[in-house]
Image (cartoon, rainbow, N blue to C red; front, top):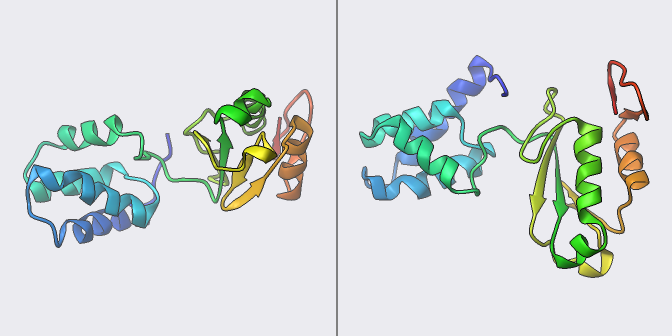
Length: 174
């Protein structure tokens, strides 16, 4: 779980208040309001959910239920570098699951997670439309094709992350 700073909590409440404006104060407005919050912040924090619930006059648990039901919503802030591993048919057939497992091991996070320093987040996507380059990893908006476990290490190295095989040391990713 990622702990938010007081500034991030304040920004979440402000984003929620801003998102509610312009919509009818009804339960039917909930999904578009949450989408606006995520568009602005990159995720929907608990503080934003509580603010929306208060503004719409519904229980916070109902807002949380909607956020956790739809996979379009993130509960944690995305990393500075958002890593998306394609698992569409071509990427899956060319080893996309191996690449996803490699990213998980190297970063020490699961799909949907973010590293403690918030540098990296990891997602699985259905298809990025670059099937001829399978398997594909997208980092922020940059497409990397024909990715191998060695290429994962190289990409991390290019970001200044030291990758060691074996024992993990402080400041290094295993």
